[in-house]
Image (cartoon, rainbow, N blue to C red; front, side, top):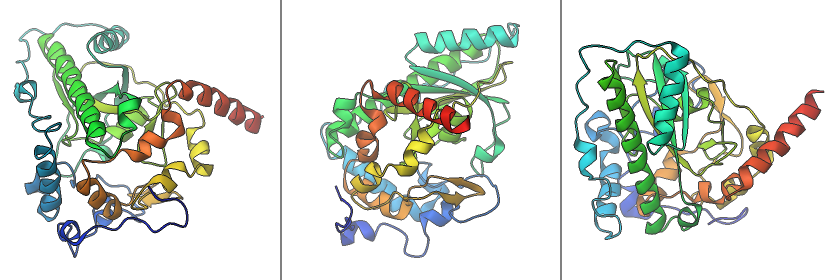
Length: 325
């Protein structure tokens, strides 16, 4: 890890050579762009969609397959199962009832969090189509003790375990909805789907965006992974949950100082027309590829310590209320 004043990690030549010499990932991601637009595919879509980054993505895949703890970790049979057919007769219910039923079902089938948001086409990747009006976002909690071993393989195994759980939760919910005669399409990480899940989760009430580029939830902190289901069920959206995490990140530098390649910006950046916390792709990705992924920034985040997030959220909410008074 790097502390303030230390020299950041730099990629060895073999890793640096796998990054495109004439294309910045930050440019692809829209850093500095003043206008809203859909995100461009980059990682982790199929390499054919972004051939410039195929070499670095393949290196990550190869690293996993060379580590016994991670070999085949994402090649689970359930990932290959096709969705069940949509039932010929659709069950009708009110939006209020569907919303309650969806949440009850998701929480009973491996999800730890569930929220609903309207699909924002600005969050749909270029080249993809999402015609359903709603996205059901699912969150799954990661074991902090295992995540704290980042960037070692044990942390990557925990991330993979929870990504797999999120995928199962999304597929189970997808198939339940389709069995009731409504359209639904589930997906989760680490492969990218048609829609960005982090901004969708923010709209679905999961919390606020942290300086490390991940969600900060008032109950689970930053130790979670996301999955989602788009659907045409009539649903009621959740409200965004603002409790002061953004204010906290403004003055906190813990993840910034802990990032070995110094990839976390200390101030917000304009990205595709939105001022937000942003991680420098060109610095982050080579380190991610050199290890087995990373996760240091999430592991050191004060909100991630078990039992801390609810207390911090309450404290920051009181502070916001005093400031507004």
